[in-house]
Image (tube, rainbow, N blue to C red; front, side, top):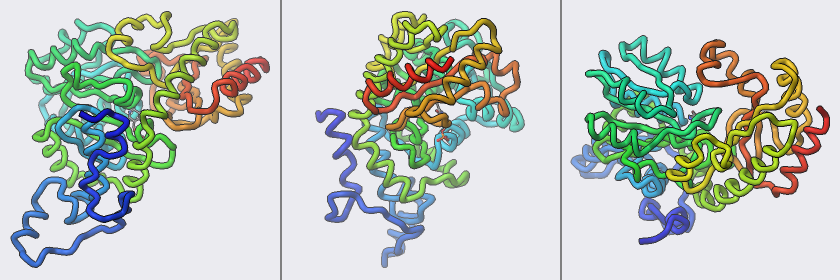
Amino acid sequence: MRKTETNLIHMGEEHNQTKAVVTPIYQTSTYFADEDLDQYITAATTPKHPEFYHRHGNPTNSQVAAIVANLEKTEDALVLATGMAAISTAILAIVKAGDHIVAQNAHYSGATLFLKDFLSEYGVTVTHVDQTDNNAFAQAIQENTKLIYIETPSNPNLDITDLEYVGKLGKERGIITMVDNTFSSPINQIPAEFGVDVIVHSATKYLGGHSDLTAGIVCGSKEYITKVWRRSITLGASLSPFDSWLLLRGLKTLSLRVNQINANALALAKWLEQNSAIKKVAYTGLESHPQHALAAKQMKGHTGMLCIEVAGTDESQEFKNAQTILSNLKIFANAASLGGVESLVVHPASMWGAHHSSTQKKVSGITRGMLRISVGIEHIDDIIADWEQAISHI
Ligand SMILES: *Cc1c(COP(=O)(O)O)cnc(C)c1O
């Protein structure tokens, strides 16, 4: 069997039916009917048919799906317009009014809004649990629980959920398990190996990797992905041909990028941990991470995501110092998003201030002196020098 690096370049090549070495951009909304109308009926009704109408499918989307399904070790995958389209469509293919979901206290903010505000208006109830407590998942299960939805490492605190435990729990109780694998990427973590059924991604992040597109992917069994596809043609969030092509291009270097990012982030985390201006560094690759052993068991690498708390005499001083660092960093742009080749940093308390109440921020563990860092592939010496000079302004 070929290895990941080879599959990233060559998987799904059969979806490119031209002689072009690089899959072309199929910039078209619709495709000719075959002369034989029976064949046209087949095109119109076959799930993900690549040459009928764009909302149903596109050859580049098929190729991207083949690559990511292979990486995630699932039978099939569906590409959609954003990570949130992937998450919402994937969940709406499972639950209906009267059903119940077990989810975590901490999730990506858009997923939290979907679980807390949107689904409740459509009669779906959700119980949120502490992801670091295995028993809490089992205890939250009700007779009408149809889905256990997890995210690990989670945003922004980098807490870990035990994939093997949740995978087994779902199988024992006949409940579908779904994980947001955006932070890890399949280079660092393959949840299907631990029995998790469905994997969702914001491909906007590591999979695309260049901060130039938005996309989402759902991975799972062929039967389930067909259900998601049926939902998707009604909900309508298909990925545009050009963004799909950019994603295909980005995927080719996924392994190279993620491995370099893992190394850079570990070096930066170690440097920050010994710096007295920093109170706390949360990075799953550090031995000081309370769940380091579990992370090491289920992750091959520790991603480019770290979360720090800036030191100060009190909370308002911590906030001021975090602001000083933010405004002086030069390589790290203060911008939302993550997983690109360029390093980014955000202040979670202000970024999510508009969406989350102060109680929700507390539940998600967000403090005012906190900074979330996404490390890129710049040279590690320049990365550390940037933090050194920014900290010196405190
Ligand atoms: C960004 C992100 C999402 C949402 O993805 P979009 O592409 O912005 O819709 C979902 N989950 C995680 C963990 C993310 O970081």
